[in-house]
Amino acid sequence: MSARKQQLLKTHRRNKRLFLLAALVVLALLGVLVAWWLVPLLLVAGWVAHEAWFADHLFYAPGDDYHYQFPLGTPTQAVTLTAGKAQLSAALAPGETLILAVHVRANWLGRWLDPYVRVGDDRQDFERGVAGRRYLNLSGQALALAEGQLTIEGHFCRLAAQAELFCLSNPDYAEQAVMILAPHADDAELAAFGLYSRSRNVSIVTLTQGEIEAEHYQRLGLPGSEAARLKGRLRAWDSLAVPLWGGVPASRCVQLGYYCLQLPAMAAEPDKAFGSRESGESDVRSVRQHNPLLLPADSDGVPSWRNLVADLVQALEHFRPQVVVTPHPELDPHSDHVATTQALHQAIALSSCKPHTLLLYANHLHDNDRWPMGPAGNGIALPPAIEALPADPLWSPLLSPAVQLDKAMALGMQHDLQGRPPLKKRVRRLIQQLLAGRRWPATGEDEFFRKAVRRHELFWARRLPD
Image (cartoon, rainbow, N blue to C red):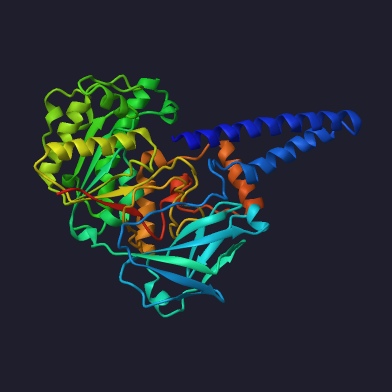
């Protein structure tokens, strides 16, 4: 996390403590000077207001601009928003991924209800109180845009009359040989189910078992270590079996069997073994029996960084991908995700297989745990970029309603996305539904069913040197 984000978090926590202290003083005075029963009543009202409007984890100011840079030579043109429609200043430049930069400002209702923009038949949501430069995803709307018929209207917010359109051209990467790196079971589905379900030549490599946080399985009467081993076996099975729902056979899927949250430590000490924090295991071969190829670490089972990189080299040389899908190292802060892409770069340097493109994805964010914001099934506006990211092209393929449903069902098969949320989260959702108008999908209760099942998938296409 950058120094700026750390300062925002520090300020947020300080302001919250000061607010609570002031509120306690006011409540105490009211209890003494007015009536004691006001104190519990106001405490309940304050808690409900917090859950409805102030519980989002947003570690930047809604008035901050997002800062995106695109490669030199990216076609761009001015767009005028008038009478609820987008009017181009010139003929639409070629490109399947269309990004509209526009200043969005919430009105007074947009501080209590999620402000959003209707883009034709799509909807893209933003932060409450938004007042800055944002990036709408117009991918899939090119025909209506070119004909001057694309409606763009703010709800609980106003849009500036002048905007800037970026047109980004990409090949259809689904037509090339693709390898997807998933730090954990379900990462491939969350980021790229739509991509891999239509790819003719795709492989999926999952790096970890996903064995930690197995308290749910302790309800079966298992001690902690056995519960973790069971969860690791189940999620390893998910990584091999669930892709079949998207047309990827187990012969194209590999489970490496390393341990959750240990990848950064492995990277720091490449020759040292790092077993599971919770299961007590330290042999990666325990979940490799269904792999379709032999890997270097099969000889000793040691969970070391050196073995991980060697396994990735072998997977690259076996499947020979032209494109590798992997977590965005600057945008996705999960430590295992960052380490996954680090390991990939080391493996490519050692391998005879040289992919030409990385498709980078973000399943987690530093700044905003609700992104993509808004209900499931809608488009994906660009995520917060308060500090500028590298100037990578974007690729945002469309998912039909049928593919979105299949993606939701694939997530439903993942053991880590099953089960009910904690009671506190269920109560918060009910309050937000009643008071803030938020909605969650019927396909599943985990937050990823809302965030990941969308009209678009979104990748940063980073070219690798020849």
